[in-house]
Image (cartoon, rainbow, N blue to C red; front, side):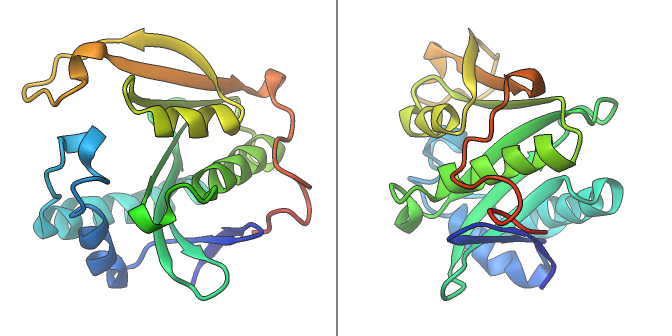
Length: 196
């Protein structure tokens, strides 16, 4: 297992082809996909032929920046994933934070714990200049995680989607945190809180 980092309760590691079924199951839950596709599942072929190859390409190009499978540290249960990668390949100093967790993991603080650890590591060790995150304006759970992780509301904007889903009319929101404004937000952040 190629571990990216660990926290008090989480292990974030590189994806492998053995994770195909886990990703299909995660993206097959209508509640997990509610604010992404309106509840439609991601087809298995898309996971196999598009998503996993994209994740592997990011590991090759960026090393410490990409998509990370999240597991419980005690027991190894698959919880979902975290994204911490440059949305613009020309500017690797600006990093997009994202997360998608199984419903069984919701409300337990895992999203905040993983997000804080990635942000702290990005600013402390990886030379990240700015972290951004996006979600639908109506996705209050995701917005709460962004705020708890130290990001601040920047703006609401509207995209033109070919197949809008309920809530699209209220727009998308951007949250961000600049390195100059960052203070370690996780308990014991730094050496000992997370490890490579």
